[in-house]
Image (cartoon, rainbow, N blue to C red; front, side, top):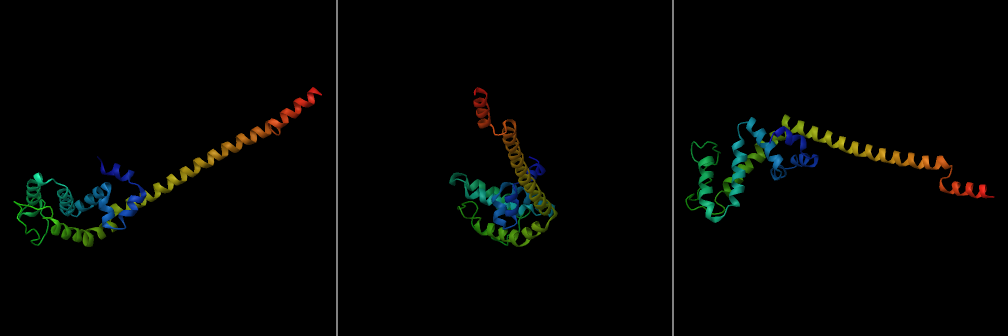
Length: 184
Protein backbone atom coordinates (compact mmCIF):
# COMPACT_ATOMS: atom_id res chain seq x y z
CA UNK A 1 0.00 0.00 0.00
CA UNK A 2 1.26 3.48 -0.86
CA UNK A 3 2.68 5.37 2.12
CA UNK A 4 1.18 8.65 0.95
CA UNK A 5 -2.29 7.02 0.87
CA UNK A 6 -1.80 5.91 4.48
CA UNK A 7 -0.58 9.33 5.47
CA UNK A 8 -3.64 11.01 4.04
CA UNK A 9 -5.82 8.66 6.09
CA UNK A 10 -3.91 8.91 9.38
CA UNK A 11 -6.30 10.07 12.10
CA UNK A 12 -5.40 13.40 13.69
CA UNK A 13 -5.39 11.87 17.18
CA UNK A 14 -2.89 9.20 16.08
CA UNK A 15 -0.52 11.67 14.45
CA UNK A 16 -0.61 13.96 17.48
CA UNK A 17 -0.06 10.96 19.82
CA UNK A 18 3.07 9.97 17.87
CA UNK A 19 4.62 13.18 19.15
CA UNK A 20 3.96 12.21 22.78
CA UNK A 21 6.19 9.14 22.97
CA UNK A 22 7.98 6.52 20.95
CA UNK A 23 5.63 3.94 22.48
CA UNK A 24 2.62 5.75 21.03
CA UNK A 25 4.31 5.84 17.63
CA UNK A 26 5.20 2.14 17.69
CA UNK A 27 1.73 1.05 18.85
CA UNK A 28 0.23 2.35 15.61
CA UNK A 29 0.82 0.41 12.37
CA UNK A 30 0.72 3.60 10.30
CA UNK A 31 3.11 5.22 12.76
CA UNK A 32 5.52 2.32 12.31
CA UNK A 33 5.40 2.75 8.53
CA UNK A 34 5.98 6.50 8.70
CA UNK A 35 8.84 6.07 11.18
CA UNK A 36 10.39 3.36 9.01
CA UNK A 37 10.18 5.66 6.00
CA UNK A 38 11.95 8.38 7.98
CA UNK A 39 14.61 5.97 9.23
CA UNK A 40 15.21 4.82 5.66
CA UNK A 41 16.19 8.41 4.76
CA UNK A 42 18.80 8.19 7.53
CA UNK A 43 19.94 4.69 6.56
CA UNK A 44 18.92 3.29 9.95
CA UNK A 45 15.64 1.45 9.37
CA UNK A 46 17.31 -1.75 10.57
CA UNK A 47 16.84 -0.56 14.16
CA UNK A 48 13.07 -0.46 13.83
CA UNK A 49 12.98 -3.67 11.81
CA UNK A 50 15.03 -5.46 14.48
CA UNK A 51 12.77 -4.14 17.24
CA UNK A 52 9.67 -5.32 15.33
CA UNK A 53 11.26 -8.72 14.66
CA UNK A 54 11.88 -9.07 18.40
CA UNK A 55 8.24 -8.19 19.11
CA UNK A 56 7.14 -10.89 16.66
CA UNK A 57 9.63 -13.32 18.21
CA UNK A 58 7.95 -12.97 21.59
CA UNK A 59 4.75 -14.32 20.03
CA UNK A 60 6.51 -17.25 18.33
CA UNK A 61 5.54 -20.72 19.43
CA UNK A 62 8.14 -22.84 21.16
CA UNK A 63 8.35 -25.18 18.16
CA UNK A 64 9.23 -22.31 15.80
CA UNK A 65 11.45 -20.39 18.21
CA UNK A 66 14.82 -21.79 17.08
CA UNK A 67 14.19 -21.00 13.40
CA UNK A 68 12.88 -17.52 14.25
CA UNK A 69 15.88 -16.78 16.47
CA UNK A 70 18.23 -17.92 13.73
CA UNK A 71 16.49 -15.64 11.19
CA UNK A 72 16.84 -12.64 13.51
CA UNK A 73 20.47 -13.49 14.23
CA UNK A 74 21.30 -13.92 10.54
CA UNK A 75 19.49 -10.77 9.41
CA UNK A 76 20.43 -8.37 12.21
CA UNK A 77 23.12 -9.65 14.58
CA UNK A 78 25.90 -11.59 12.90
CA UNK A 79 28.91 -9.73 11.55
CA UNK A 80 28.20 -8.52 8.00
CA UNK A 81 24.46 -9.19 8.38
CA UNK A 82 22.34 -7.55 5.70
CA UNK A 83 20.73 -5.25 8.28
CA UNK A 84 23.26 -5.40 11.08
CA UNK A 85 22.34 -3.46 14.22
CA UNK A 86 24.86 -2.12 16.70
CA UNK A 87 24.48 -4.25 19.84
CA UNK A 88 27.76 -4.25 21.78
CA UNK A 89 27.63 -8.00 22.33
CA UNK A 90 24.15 -7.95 23.92
CA UNK A 91 23.27 -11.35 22.42
CA UNK A 92 25.05 -13.71 24.72
CA UNK A 93 22.56 -16.55 24.88
CA UNK A 94 23.09 -19.58 22.67
CA UNK A 95 20.92 -19.06 19.58
CA UNK A 96 20.76 -22.82 18.97
CA UNK A 97 18.69 -23.17 22.19
CA UNK A 98 16.92 -19.79 22.36
CA UNK A 99 14.62 -18.89 25.21
CA UNK A 100 11.56 -16.66 24.89
CA UNK A 101 13.54 -13.67 26.19
CA UNK A 102 16.85 -14.17 24.42
CA UNK A 103 16.59 -10.87 22.51
CA UNK A 104 15.14 -8.73 25.33
CA UNK A 105 18.37 -6.96 26.33
CA UNK A 106 19.29 -6.29 22.72
CA UNK A 107 15.77 -5.06 21.97
CA UNK A 108 15.89 -2.68 24.95
CA UNK A 109 19.23 -1.33 23.75
CA UNK A 110 17.87 -0.67 20.25
CA UNK A 111 14.69 0.87 21.70
CA UNK A 112 16.82 3.20 23.82
CA UNK A 113 18.88 4.14 20.79
CA UNK A 114 15.74 4.95 18.79
CA UNK A 115 14.13 6.82 21.70
CA UNK A 116 17.15 9.01 22.41
CA UNK A 117 18.53 9.47 18.91
CA UNK A 118 16.19 8.70 16.01
CA UNK A 119 12.84 9.60 17.56
CA UNK A 120 13.73 13.22 18.48
CA UNK A 121 15.01 13.74 14.92
CA UNK A 122 11.81 12.18 13.56
CA UNK A 123 9.70 14.70 15.51
CA UNK A 124 11.67 17.56 13.94
CA UNK A 125 11.66 16.00 10.45
CA UNK A 126 9.83 17.42 7.47
CA UNK A 127 7.97 14.11 7.16
CA UNK A 128 6.39 14.31 10.62
CA UNK A 129 5.89 18.08 10.66
CA UNK A 130 4.12 18.04 7.28
CA UNK A 131 1.96 15.11 8.33
CA UNK A 132 1.07 16.77 11.62
CA UNK A 133 0.12 20.01 9.88
CA UNK A 134 -1.90 18.14 7.24
CA UNK A 135 -3.71 16.07 9.86
CA UNK A 136 -4.61 19.09 11.93
CA UNK A 137 -5.89 20.93 8.87
CA UNK A 138 -7.97 17.96 7.72
CA UNK A 139 -9.31 17.57 11.26
CA UNK A 140 -10.40 21.21 11.24
CA UNK A 141 -12.02 20.76 7.82
CA UNK A 142 -13.95 17.73 9.07
CA UNK A 143 -15.17 19.65 12.12
CA UNK A 144 -16.07 22.58 9.89
CA UNK A 145 -17.97 20.39 7.40
CA UNK A 146 -19.88 18.69 10.21
CA UNK A 147 -20.71 22.09 11.63
CA UNK A 148 -21.82 23.31 8.18
CA UNK A 149 -24.04 20.24 7.75
CA UNK A 150 -25.68 20.94 11.11
CA UNK A 151 -26.22 24.56 10.06
CA UNK A 152 -27.81 23.43 6.77
CA UNK A 153 -30.11 21.00 8.60
CA UNK A 154 -31.14 23.69 11.06
CA UNK A 155 -31.71 26.13 8.22
CA UNK A 156 -33.93 23.62 6.36
CA UNK A 157 -35.95 22.96 9.51
CA UNK A 158 -36.35 26.68 10.12
CA UNK A 159 -37.47 27.29 6.52
CA UNK A 160 -39.94 24.41 6.69
CA UNK A 161 -41.31 25.70 10.00
CA UNK A 162 -41.57 29.27 8.67
CA UNK A 163 -43.23 28.03 5.51
CA UNK A 164 -45.78 26.08 7.51
CA UNK A 165 -46.50 29.10 9.71
CA UNK A 166 -46.50 31.49 6.75
CA UNK A 167 -48.89 29.55 4.51
CA UNK A 168 -51.64 29.38 7.02
CA UNK A 169 -50.58 32.28 9.17
CA UNK A 170 -50.78 29.91 12.10
CA UNK A 171 -50.77 26.57 10.45
CA UNK A 172 -53.41 24.01 11.38
CA UNK A 173 -55.28 26.17 13.93
CA UNK A 174 -55.99 28.94 11.46
CA UNK A 175 -57.31 26.43 8.97
CA UNK A 176 -59.83 25.12 11.54
CA UNK A 177 -60.88 28.67 12.47
CA UNK A 178 -61.45 29.59 8.81
CA UNK A 179 -63.60 26.48 8.29
CA UNK A 180 -65.74 27.32 11.33
CA UNK A 181 -66.24 30.90 10.06
CA UNK A 182 -67.33 29.64 6.63
CA UNK A 183 -69.89 27.29 8.19
CA UNK A 184 -71.45 30.13 10.18
